Length: 308
Ligand SMILES: Cc1cc2nc3c(=O)[nH]c(=O)nc-3n(C[C@H](O)[C@H](O)[C@H](O)COP(=O)(O)OP(=O)(O)OC[C@H]3O[C@@H](n4cnc5c(N)ncnc54)[C@H](O)[C@@H]3O)c2cc1C
Image (cartoon, rainbow, N blue to C red):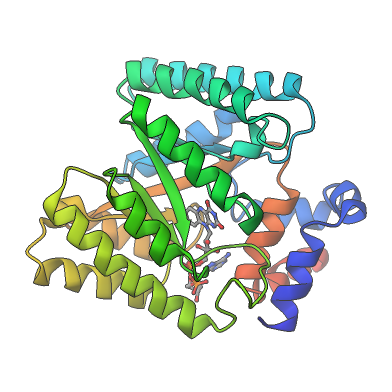
């Protein structure tokens, strides 16, 4: 892992910076590249602009590691009202959330109940919910949670990360329960004991896992999503899908708002499916710094805002 990426991932967890940097005007300006605003109304405006280009969205209300269950209730109520709004306005917007936003650090059972309320509302509205994958300390627990919730709901998907050595085994096991999977490379600081330290190995693993996902997609009624902006991987997955005679309409690419927008437009005109994840909310600091770490060149964009 490069020094720049490592330093940024350290900064993403730093409390002093979390409390102060969010007030700095040049940072607030720079964050707009990745986030249309702090309110759900701003996110809906952005989703409508994308929808006009036939690009559906996924919403994430930013937040993680909440420290009391009252906060979790507010998060649940927020998502319930957003699902209602999406349904009433007939928008194609799914939900993606972090379990630590629903109380995972405090109580597994309360998190299950909180999640059930959201998944049940989404299911009634014909909508879907994705579970983000957080750092490696949560992977066992999150997979256990997904397996449990999958018995009750068919409209829930799970994110897996190709930088972890364990993901190949996790994917093979999950395939038995016909999961919905969103594969990403992984955004946290992890040690080389559990994660590939070299980017090229993360990419190779991503492609190997993609092949397994495509084979599963061919045989089962599942959703297999490729969450990446890596054009080389997008092309390779598309080609592999064609070789396996998979209908292109079944192959989904999910990208983040504001990243590789030309590619988003291109994919919207192709036969593959595309969806763009829009994040919003006041609690954007750790999430934003992880975006900077993915491409340390983004820091220059922040610096440019100081002078503009
Ligand atoms: C839909 C979606 C959901 C995600 N959910 C999770 C999750 O639940 N858990 C998790 O750990 N991670 C998640 N991530 C983040 C993911 O793990 C990666 O950190 C991120 O997607 C960057 O990796 P990449 O696949 O785009 O490949 P990279 O090799 O990092 O990037 C490929 C190219 O895309 C562009 N690019 C990538 N990131 C940026 C950026 N921040 N700014 C500007 N350009 C950029 C650059 O041109 C880069 O060369 C998610 C990503 C997506 C797209």
